[in-house]
Structure formats: C-alpha cells, structure tokens
Image (cartoon, rainbow, N blue to C red):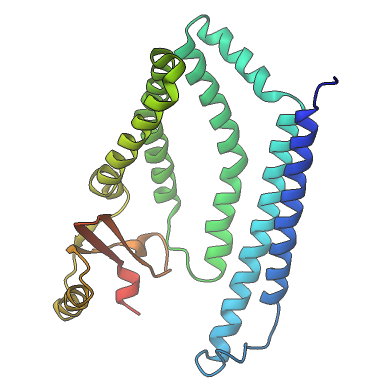
Length: 266
C-alpha cells in the first residue's frame, strides 16, 4: 500500500483555506468601498463619519490581506522546503545531546524568523495606516520599549514553560498527556491572575476610575444585573492609540472592569 502524501495534502488544504479566507476578505473590502450608508443605520451615522470609517477599514483590510498572503507564502515555503527539520538539526549543533538546550535554540530560531517577517508589517500598520487616519499616539521609543518588554517576558515565562513541558512529557510516560493537560489548566488559571496584576501594568497605567458620577452609574448597573464587580479602573490607552475600548476580567465571584481613558473623553 503506497504511503499517503501527507505534506502535499496538508499544503493543498492550507492553500484552499487561505484562498477562501482571502475571498471573504475581498468581499468585505468591496463592502468598505461602497459610498452608500446602509439603510439600517442611515439615521444613526453621519455621512462624514461613515466616509472616514470606510476609508480606514479599506486601508486596514487591504493591508491585512497583503500581510496574510506574505505570511502564508513564508509558511508554505518553510514547510515545502523542510525548513523546520533543518532548523532542528542546526539547533542540535548548538545544543548537542541536551534536549532542553536544543529545544530552546530551535524555538529561538523559529521565533526570530517569525519576528523578522512580521515586525515590518507591525511598524507599517502603526506608523503609516494608524497615523494616516489619526489614531496613532505611539512614539518610536514606546514601540521599542514594548518590543523589549515583550521579548523579555517571552524569555522569562515562555522558555521555562517549554522546559517544563519537555520534563513533564519525559516524566509522565505513556500517560503524559493527562499530566500535561492538568499542568496546562493550572498555568492558564495562574496566568489569568498574574497578567492583570503583574504583566499588564508593565505596559499601561491602571488607576481607580476618578469620575465619581460615572463610577456610581456603572456600580448601580452592575448591581442591578448581579454582576460581581469588585474593582473599576481606567487605563491610559491614549498613549498608544486614539481608539476607545473597555473590557472586564476575573473569576466569576470577583470581576474587574477596565475603561480606556479615550472612551471617557468621547
């Protein structure tokens, strides 16, 4: 019985998925080119606001399509040319017989390739497209600072996690997947507690909502809905973007709401 050509089949599947997704993106881009306000919202949206929104979404959509095609081509070539096995062999030259060192070296190499292929798109998206439409508030120094912090967090958190996974697989034997599932659940819960308290403050400033009138309204609304609101924060999102947003996080018995300062100024 001939061997199943898994790689060609997988590449064909990926290509079909990419073509279908880009087709959907193109359809949406065409909708963004329409000068007519949809009748469902015609009474709610001003024509000037609609035109600005359409122009912004056209640029964002087209940029996203180009980035997706480039990243797909990179991934396709790396799979087709068996680049990952070759990178693993190169990592073995550095790590020798040490499985942990080889794995971390392999991860570093692949992450570097991913970073180099995406950083230019990230810069263009922020400092060209967002700037063009008046949303960018990020400075080059802040951008570099964010990149350094993100890389440092990857090294401090990501690498030990990878080593832990390797050890757990070797220690767990044939039932390693059960232990790995349990460890993943514990790690996910731990990160959901650590991120808002230790990691997020490295990038943004959080302080109690200082608008007492708004605070009272939100607390009353939360109480009427039996929403377990414990804390209410405002965040300095304006130092990076003019976009407005808000979110909540936490476990079911104690949740926190974070409101971007840009939303408070609307």
